[in-house]
Image (cartoon, rainbow, N blue to C red; front, side, top):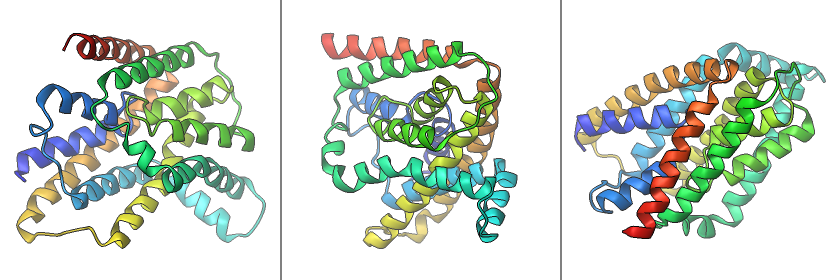
Length: 264
């Protein structure tokens, strides 16, 4: 792996982890347009490193929130911090169940089905459009909201459905304050990322080559820095109701993907 390729992949991962454009959907489109062999299959270890970088960028951006949650847990009190932690755990349930029991069925969607990706991008566009038009509120995420948002996160495992777009849109449509919705969306994925990293590490499939250490390090730094920018930027965009721009983008890309699948 070249250092330049690692940096580019790191930037893409860092941006698409937070911006509502579906990184998995764009990867499938790229593989179909360029050919499966034109997009190099990166090692599992590199994938783990990039996901760790974006999770770390989330923790840095929300460091105060994370510290408050940890303090609340160790106080063993039914306070706001412990309740928020429980809501995060509740939101993880749907995605964990899908990952454990339907992993093979899910992988079947990642097989160059461009028309399906295009349709899911249209779904993402619709969600973003309506979320952008939702009225401002001051409501927090409830326990019921947490589970419903978790269902959206599980559905977003499909290529073409943006995870951040689906979870933030669902939160806002449920009446949650837009800033709180973005905060919950980004924090709820951190335990899942670390859980997936732990699962991959225990699988024994991680192969490290010292010759790749510089490239992987460069990819990690690129993903971390891009994640910091994208996470902070996305919070501001949600607060200012700028999701319609991403709705238009997903609509156009979705239509192009569907057209490509029909006439190619």
